[in-house]
Image (cartoon, rainbow over all chains, first blue to last red; front, side):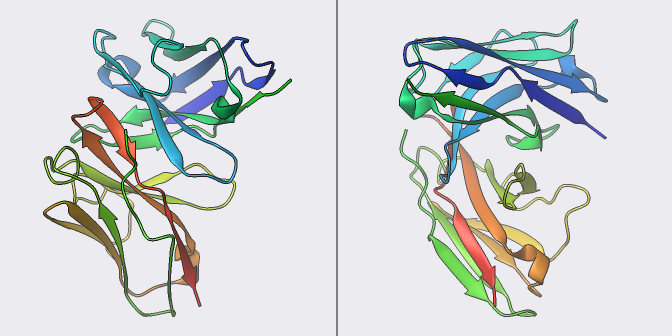
Length: 119
Length: 111
């Protein structure tokens, strides 16, 4: 069964930085696009960023553009999200999700990692 | 990017059918057949239920079906069961961000 395990979440002060990681296993990581999706406490899902299988195509939500950077290391089967200039409104559970074989969707999700931005 | 519009809540009795709507624009739902639906139980990660408007991934019950008309997509759950009680989110590709957009979510209560 596909496995995605996020790590790197925690408590950070406003203006601070954090780097999230997502370790992938039990599938050929380099064949699939990956995305980060977040969910603020008690709120809905918000798409954050997308990276293609090769890493050459990247998109961001307007809310994080210029502050967050998505990247991947196909040799290490890992996805990353570098988050800078963090704000209180970035507080959320961050999920990494694998793209679908066919179509545009998020086929498998990790269990999420909580990021709390507070002074 | 504006979220897609879903009803906040729907309810139904066991065995009944319910439909959850998801309204967007011609830049997302209406412009592409890339609508997907996710089920999320409390404290759990979302699970893909429908992709590309009406396709079911392997392992998802055929009680779940999807459709689209114009700028509105729909998820129908037939033969409601207690385990279907969860939050449901729609999502679509959007040309606005070249990425994704989600609906606000719908809480399904099985009476």
